[in-house]
Image (cartoon, rainbow, N blue to C red):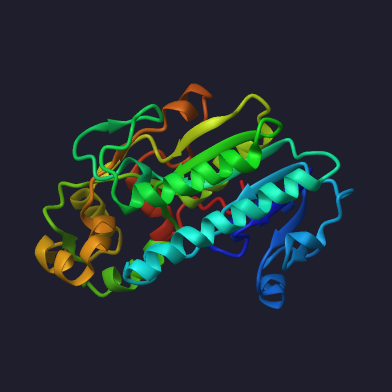
Length: 306
């Protein structure tokens, strides 16, 4: 297949592009930094700086849209929140314009989103049918992105929306935490009772590939492992894998004071379940947190592309 990827140089995107290339797909990647993209993408990848570079006659069989600035990179000022939304919606609208002018529409658009759609939901179990429990900024961000994707796909393109949890691997959030934990400085945040919905990077890549390659897949899919954990469990397991103590704690109030609304990323609770993936009999290679963190921290049974 000829596959167009946005966000292809990010934590998820680079792993995804390596997998797609290994599977024999032909890649086009949208990047504002073409020279930097070529350094991290598979040889032979067509790097685009603008979707207008694609002629109407270009064959694009599938689009995977992961573009968007990092949600935890900076404090959520009003200007920052607008930029986070715009960075996702603007690219998705560009994709819609591309679909509209191609001689032949793509078969599928797989579009990113997040479990932030559900808001801070406490102990509630959240499947794809659940409504937002709290319409906070996480919900507003995901809802705007999903709405733009629905408009871009229209009636002619199969649309899969992927609500992703915390992606665990040697980059992303865990890449920033591991040095602290290896020094024994990892800490439990708040009460520790808040639920964390997570997925191993290898399973995340496999989910995206499955949705591209399954003609009968459409609609919302929760990209999370089947066993969410409390933050306390995640903290204790990560400390154990690093062979360090787990006694440090940071109360919720200083995080709320320092981070404001952004503290919901660390203190909010989302117990999300991958019901639709399970109905497809998707087999998670890392269904539990112990196996996932052991592979990441200690390099056990690593599957780079498998």
